[in-house]
Every structure is written in C-alpha cells, then in structure tokens.
Length: 322
Image (cartoon, rainbow, N blue to C red):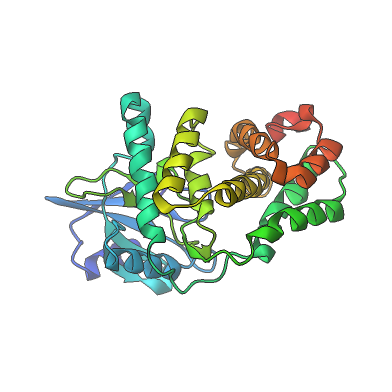
C-alpha cells in the first residue's frame, strides 16, 4: 500500500505538501485509498489508476449529489491524468461498525438509510446510462460464467437466460431513479456536523429501478441484516412512497438478480484477481438468493436453479471446488 509516485507532487500542487500519507483499506476494484494527514486537517486520497479506473464518473455523481443536498465527499483536488483525487474525509464511523458495536442503533440507522433513498428517489434521475434488461442479464450471467465452472458444474446457460428474460420483463417501463448500486452499511458514514448519512462508492451509478438500492441495503453481502429489519424497512419504503405489491415483487426479482451477480463477482475476484476473502461471503448471499427465489414471481428462475445447482453446491466456491 505505497502511494503512487505522482501522489506527492499532486498533493504539493494543491497545498497539501505537509501531509503524511497513511494507507487505508482498498476495495474489490483497482482503486486504493489513503488518508492525507496534515496539522489540523485530513483528507482522503483516492488512487484510481488509468487505464483500469476512471475517477470522472465518481466526480460527476459526487457533484450531482452535493448539489441536491446529499452528503457526498467534497472534491478538494483532482489529477485525472494520474487518476488521483483528494476528497473530504468523512472519518471512520461507518454504519457497519456502528451497528455492530451498538445493536440498539440498528433500527434507527436503517430507517435513516431508507429515508435517504426516499429523498434520492424524489429527484429526477441523473443523466446516466440506463440500468436495463440487457445489463440485468449481463450481470446475472456472471453466476454461470464464473461460479458454475469454478465448482465443476456444466449448466444450461441458454435456459438460464430465458428464465431471467421471463422474470425481468415486467420491470420494463418503471420510471427510473438514480441508482447508486453499492448502497450498503460499509458505504454509509456517520459524519460529525452532517444531518444525513455520508455516501461513498457510487461511481457505478446508473438510472434504474428504485428497488435496486433498497435490495443492496437490506440484502447486504457483507453483514447479516435480520429478516425482521428487512421486512420492516421494505414496508417503511413502500408506505412512505406509496407503492405496493408490484414494488415488493420487483424487490425480490432484483434481489435474486443482484445476489446471482454478486456470487459470480465474488468467484471472479478469487479466480481472476487473487482475492480469496470474497468467496467466504457467498454462503450469506446464497441465503438471500434462496429467500428471493421463494417468491412466486421468481418461479422460472427458481426451477432452473433447482435443476442445475443442487443445494449442496450452493456456498463458498473455494470450499466446493475442493
């Protein structure tokens, strides 16, 4: 976790030449993060190296959110040629650790996160690429592309796509909202001086269905969200926005789609990128996926899973691969 060579000249050029650079955790992408600490101030240095990463989508979405009163990090400096961005430091108080340390805060913070989504969905969507059926199919296909071969299963990919086509088709025509796509407890920050949760990791935002970010929050691949909390928060969103059974159905359809995608991505992170910690999260994701597949609207996809991936083959792909 050494900073890139361009980091020190970049920081010096924007008045942070007295900063000490401290490594922070990376993520599932090529992006890395550092904390720049100077006397009386600190900031976050994002290293999004080209050609693997492009920080411009992050900058664009951050500014769009900030203009509408949401707490995205302020942009303190940027060097696009080297993929460097200096961001406002939101501190270390993530929703994840806060809830784990103080379980009595769980309901309150999830309610706050749901109400933030309600406010976000009240705005006209940002001009973004559509999150459409083509993208849903591509993402769902990551499970058959990566997970199934990893555990030695040869499956009917055409039948998988056909089942998803049938299930996803009713989502067409729903008015789009800005979908942040990775909206969960590790990307939500409690910030001193802010009345709302801070937002991170939204560079992949698209214009899509309002149920998607709710799924991301309530079927969290990285922590167990109690079923009672999930049900209460889904009900809170539906009552607040004034939606009913069609939205609940879409929630479970997109839950299944997202969880199938995540299982594929976590397998790919192990096999292609050498990151073996991600497959250990797959058993939790399978639990969510099976819960979604129980919804009647998912019957075609559920039949495909029952025919092609036995229950004993639904888990950590590293363990199953032997």
